[in-house]
Image 1 (cartoon, rainbow, N blue to C red):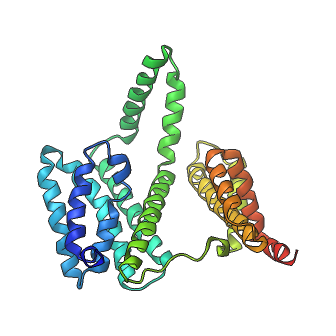
Image 2 (cartoon, one colour; image 1 turned 180 degrees about the vertical axis):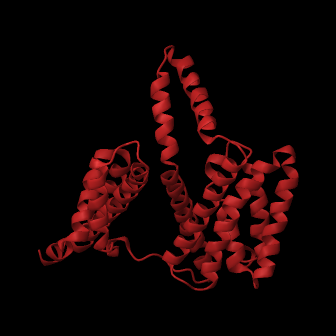
Image 3 (cartoon, rainbow, N blue to C red; image 1 turned 90 degrees about the vertical axis):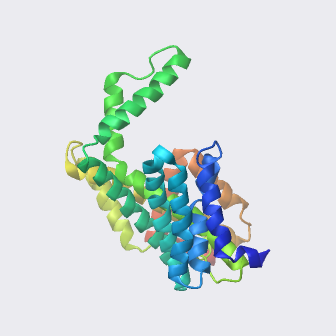
Length: 304
C-alpha cells in the first residue's frame, strides 16, 4: 500500500478525481483536499521536472473536460496548484513546518490579490458583483421569511464594510487552506517514510513580546480614526488579525496550563471550541494571550 501511495502517478490521478468532485455536492468536503495531491507529487517525485509533468497533465485534462467553464477551472487550479507546489518544495528542502505554512499562505495571498487586481483592470466592479450576489441571497431569505429582512441602506453599509475587509478575508482563506493542507500532507509523508516536520507542541507556542505594542497601537488608533479614512481601512483589517493571533496565543496558554498541571487536553480543546462558537470568549482568550505574551504568566504557573 505504501509503495503505491509513494508513486506520483497515483496523486496525479487523485488531482483529476478531486477536480471532478468539485462539480458535485461533495465539493464542500473535497475542496479542502485539493492541494494535498499537489504537495505529495512535489515531495515524492525524484526531480522537479517530473513533478511538473505529473501536475500539468491532470490540470490540462481538467481544463479540457471543463468545456466552456474552463476559465473558472483555470482560476481554481492557479489558486490551489501554486501554493501546493510551494509547500511541497519546502518539504523537499527539509525546512521547518513554519516555513511550509508561510510559503503556502504567502503564495495564496499573492495569487488572490493578483486575481482581484486583474478583475479591477478588466473593468469588473467587485462591489457591484458582491451587491448583486448579496441581494440575490437576501431575496431568497425574504421569500422564506415572508418579510423584508434587510433595508437598502443596511445592505449598502454591509457591502461597503465587506469590500474594505477583503484583505482580511484573503488572509483567513490562505491560512485556513494552508494549515489543513500541511496537517494532512505531513502525516501522509511521514507515513510514507518521507520526513516532514511538524509544528512545535501547542503548549510551547510563544509570540514575540513586541507584538503587544503593535496591538496596543492599533487598538488606540481604532478609537480615534475616522471611518472614512484610508487608515481606518488598514486598521479594520489589521485589528481582527491581531485579535485572532492573540486568541491563538491564549489557547496555547490553556494548553500550557493543562500540560503543567497534568490535566490532559480536554479542557483546553473545549476552550478552543468555545472560542470559535462564542465571539465574547474569543475576546477574553485574546486578552489572556496578550497577558501571556507581555508578562511571565507561564513562570507563575510553573512555580505554583
